[in-house]
Length: 260
Ligand code: MG
Image (cartoon, rainbow, N blue to C red; front, side, top):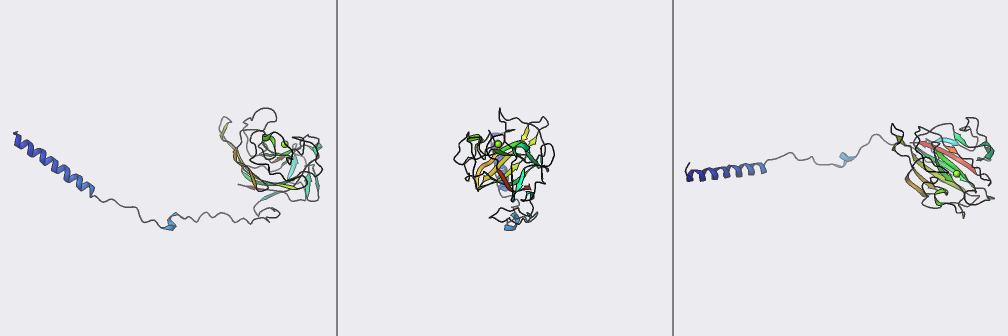
């Protein structure tokens, strides 16, 4: 091939290449359809209608399981499965220390729990020995109940703590003789085959309208001595603690729970 022919060939290849590139640039592809507002609105399933309780009394909403309505402890039993023997009087019930802990007969997984508690006006004692009780979630994890109105104790053991694990974000105590309100939102753990957490339990706690625990991860059992242990479990009861401290027993009222 002579030099002239070679140049013609190169020029021809260049032209072909340029034409095909410009043809490609002009190729039309489909464009996304025009978005309309209703394309990102879904109507089903609709959330269920729940009638709110009276905001002044925090009465149970329509879909709640009532655990104490002021009349009796029929929803509760002692830890041997016998009738709960705490004292019911005047629409409230009071811890009977000699009778031990009580627990709900029903077991729960994920829930929203409303519970009100009162430290007696004549309470005595200090630190942990002053109106100590507790609410055990799924029978395993204690949310501390204690009189911390002008009563200091170790921070991770005061009212609203995940006992010895998570200090509450605030001290929201009302003074003895007044009623405290806990609203607890709890997510049960999911376990691996080997008994460790795949998803650990989590808790949000509001006392008297103030957030004390904000989606706090629970590390394991709430031990008095030692560190949290991970123990595989399923659905569990709400346990109320009969604490051995010598101070005057505390009272509860208006307890209801919503399974989530
Ligand atoms: Mg306690």
